Length: 161
Length: 158
Image (cartoon, one colour):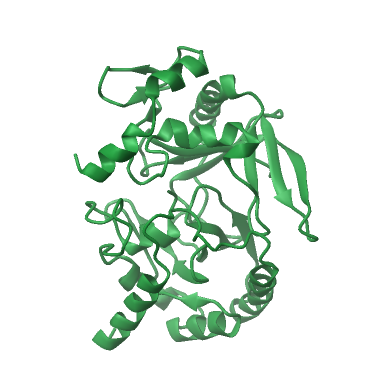
């Protein structure tokens, strides 16, 4: 990833950061129907792109509100999209390494490129953020989270709180 | 400890919480801030959460006032606040006994079938009207994979 692209993504992450809110942004609309409809239309398009079936599972006590995971997922390989409660941000993971204690996205094993998923999400009003950026240390405005050891932008927007 | 961390912990009166729970089944070493259940699950102070302590974080799910559902995700409430931590222990013992795996794509989260109602899941229907349904699973979320430190737990409908 080029430096200016990394900066653009970081600017995006910082744009939706909040000094006080952990789970939802302060202007969060719990009746936001457009996001629900966009996620459903994206899911149909994503299933067509991958020729796989996906299931959305909502989560609570997290800075993301749910995950879209392929129905035939297993623990060594899955396609999981997490939808953040902040800024319509979305992250993709395919593998978790307990050794590294982090997720990875192995695009060489996927039937689509990183650009394709970013574009498809964009067509449905979501914003894809690469893991390379999300696993940069959190340096936002939430002072409770800043300067914590092992705390990344991933944790800020896509993890349980 | 960072000032911010201490400020959060000060929000929580642990003695009040334990008195209120009334079960006496969570034990702690005075001053450590870590409570341990009979099944070995640990609940600790944590500056990542607004409540400042994982016990308080879980206790959000013992009252309707603890949160609200959205169109995108529900909110689970345990039926019996006083039995909440015993139920989580029971769920964990089922997970261990049956060797239940974590959710694919979510290695710290386990959705454990309890075989009976343990709470209510509040959700918004397609018209945005709040509804409820019986929750017979407990979702347990650990701090880290392979850990016994609790991040959160709540009843879910599956």
